[in-house]
Image (cartoon, rainbow, N blue to C red; front, side):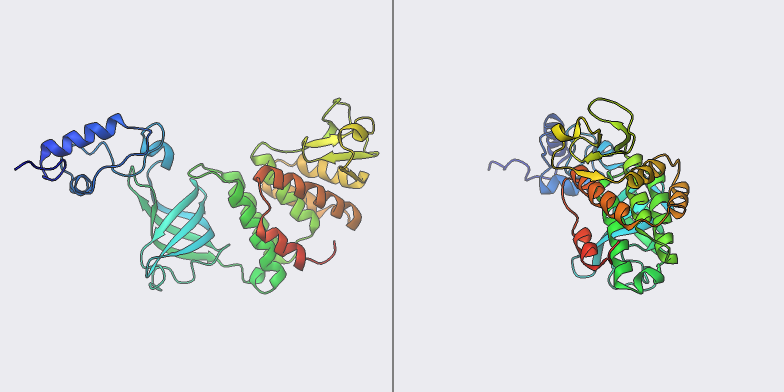
Amino acid sequence: MRRRWGSIPTRWCSATMRWWAASQRGRRKWFPRRSRRRAARGWGSSSLSWRWRSSCGCSSCAEGQPMRGTHRAIVLKVRDYGEGHRLVDLFTEESGLERAFAPSGRRSQRRFAGAFDPMTLLSATVDRPPGRGLVRLKEARVLNGWPGIRSSLEGIARGAYLVDLARALLREAKPEPEIFALLVAGLQRLESGCFRAWHRLAYELGLLAAFGALPVFDACVRCQRRSTGEQARFSPALGGLLCPRCGPRWGRHDTVLPRRGLLAAAALAEAGSAVEVFERADHLPDDSAAAKALTAALTRFVEAQVGRRLPSLDFLTELEEPL
């Protein structure tokens, strides 16, 4: 009787299938079911894995380094998985964006009491052996649930926008300590109730600066002339200002920014840390017209960088009071 390929759980079959999979790296292949079982039991060589692989064939390159221990993290998004589990997007201070699996997350109140609300600052105990895709969330303790933010609908909308914007720009398993500090500082300002339009602009400019996509506010992006602040247009497509000479030609449909708005944007863009950028926003004078014009222009630029319009921004626009 002729046996079918892969039907006998032998070492020879397992080694042959692993050799075949090694030759197919980068083609998104996987092992048959029986080979997966043998690999899970530790039979034969364990250098290859049955899961999806990156184009280079290395699981650790695409999915980050081993992560264990207790870390500070902010909850970005939560999804139910199966009957009682949950998938959580965590922004950790040490390793950036991580996708975690919380077993029995919907049932266990002892390990995850109140830990799955977005924006919550956690002390998360996680574990991910080398080569595993998802972080296993063992336990989470709430450090700050931001009750002041959740006390009003407008506060929730603003906090959701801060979290969604950071999540849209983050890359998985890449440490971003500056952005983590900026997000925590923004939530603290929002919690204290001292969050004006300038603070939102400070947060957006701080994120863009951390990702190396800060717009140009001190010179024309076409002719490189220093800006005087008079009749300057902000072009989201070009990523900066256009002088009065270049504006009518290259930015006919772009908004002319007031001089006070340009000076405020330049001051915020020169900040060196998350704490400094919000301190500079504290000292900016109230100017609703300048803040409104700069917010509209910078929102278009942020959408161009993200590639889409965030739903939380539409919700915030409907609820936010006139600037």
